[in-house]
Image 1 (cartoon, one colour):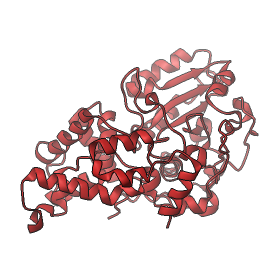
Image 2 (spheres, rainbow, N blue to C red):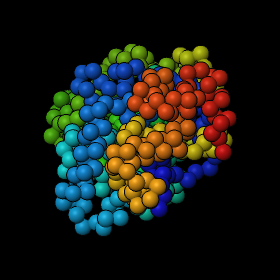
Image 3 (cartoon, helix red, strand yellow):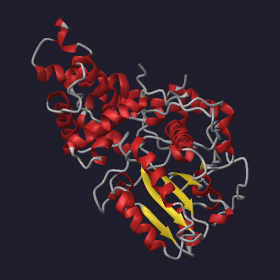
Image 4 (cartoon, rainbow, N blue to C red):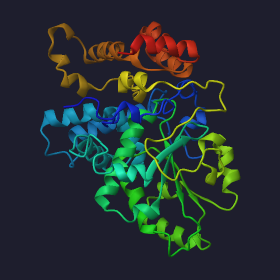
Length: 410
């Protein structure tokens, strides 16, 4: 069984990866506190390689205990199967809890569905059967905003003419690409969607296609959407929004932003000009063909303009770029899974054993994660024994980044 179920399972040639899919500016980007946890509604946006609160950590522990002892959704699973599920899904549990608004039953359902999907025959993603649609721009990535969130552009008028099965394959391909080649834990973990309604009337806009697309994204890739930009919308947009509000989850609906005639001015404040096509107010040529391989560009607003070669990206273990949830207290279920408590060398109180396991586990793992000074401070305050290792992984300058890549690349 794959241990790296979250990191993007996609099989494409090296030539299909832009050197600017991930560039130095992104790897050196330091999100603001509001980028990590929003001030207005206290929802977490960035989950990996950043400090988490004691309350969040306690929720994860309580949720795991719920899965092990109370949850009817997984009651028919064998114990070893359940332990394996939780072990593999543990890095994503906090994200799923937020997505479920900390409703444990709902979070359990999301966890099981996500686990089954990640191990299903739908993966790995390949261009088989969808190469034509990718190249013709039915669904494609193009550039990043100033917070390094990549933008998925959906041509709903093209998408409405193909089968749901093909749409699903396109969604999975694009998001596995996102997880593997665009997502960087602790730096940029979310994405935008841009939908051009082409100034069609409200009856000409395929609203059901928007609903289906959002549903597919929401069901399999939770807790990552930043905004959905609707551009060139119908004059009777309120009618369309009323329909969407009755179908989409409230949290998703609230992320829809209607951009009117001044959309170019609005987007220019959110994106560097070279990250947008001319029709959206940017300086990059409008695509009319060859939408795939996906197009990415240097971040001109940043003094660091070097891309990372595809060879370096694919040769870095995916876990490095994806990152992990900084739950410093390892749960006892993981210890049980590895039969830690059965070893005579680990006799003593459970508290002593847990503390020892925490330290041993993080000592093995911490050396592969790219950290900011703030995250390093959080780890050292809670696990001072890891101080030397953690300080070596602080990435603040190009020199830090170069040293880190040389240390960890295969």
